Length: 427
Image 1 (tube, one colour):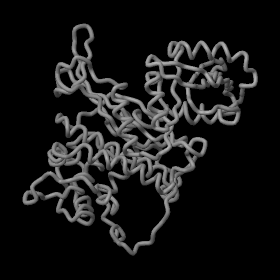
Image 2 (spheres, rainbow, N blue to C red):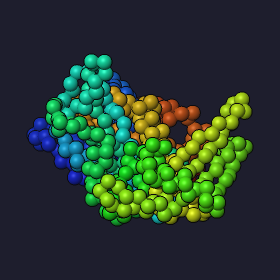
Image 3 (cartoon, helix red, strand yellow):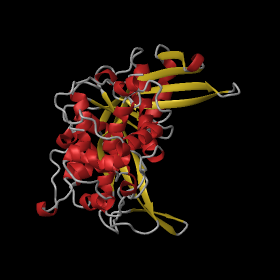
Image 4 (cartoon, rainbow, N blue to C red):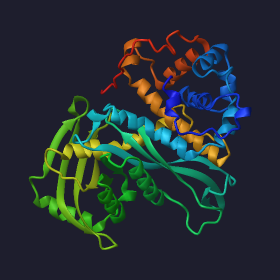
């Protein structure tokens, strides 16, 4: 709690000092609580958080008298700088990296795996703002907003937002709409500027399999694992299928899963030459995994996964690259977007119709999601509640009830309170 105001360093209060009743940290903290407690809507702040115990906590923490209204929070969000709050989002995983909390999860003891993927946030049947994307189906126009996320993902399920790029049109009638691929180049430039020395391996889907992306990664010193579709990069696919049968030593098989019921067969080809449309030359490797899994009746079905990379592939590294580089991209969809949409964070709810305020609420959600993940996987919670809570929503409910009803403890702001070390559950 005491670390929250320093986290907001650089976020300027745009309000006139004479008219300020609630401080900037107290309002943004309330916005984070909105998502940590899975309230689902802005009006729930007034309906659920305005209790005497909650007011006493805000008085103890921030020196404000009472709990702000949800509309007061929204009025502030309209006037905040989106870039300043994006910096707050990036500062949280950066601190974990600097404290070496995430060192055990580096790929091949070097790379931090960053999954890049896009998702929809809100959809309207009429134009919401000049920056809406549009889609026409059977004569009906849908207006919507998307984002492109770069999340640092780990095998134990962490999906921490590093940077967000909002996908939006420059005006109502653009000659070409904004899209994930255009947004990626903006995101990559900002990610490199913010984390210039971070060894990143990008894990991406087949949309990004192309020379410009490969060249950008090489320029930035990043690794990559990109899904290679059957109809993607024809020359690379052709060379892989021609050379793979001739390289019998580039094989690996294993059984995994419960009772070792899943059978995986890997094969790979290195030094595949690829020349893109800009005549740039690339040397690539392709990894293929054929996974055979039995269903409930014992019938076995196979799926094929294929990735293209510039990393060195050997018998010792192929499994790590495939499982913890290529397939780890799913974490951004499962532990990232799916949790935020269906796990109570209400990602697809319109918390504001103001374009700036909507972005601020999205970034507050990312801050809350990072806090929730660290809380759920922290050793302190496991020690105090060894039986758990049954689900993450149950934990959020317990947090809400504790915030609403429990009085603040004497050690809440006591600098003399004993310090404890909280570790991340690595299971």
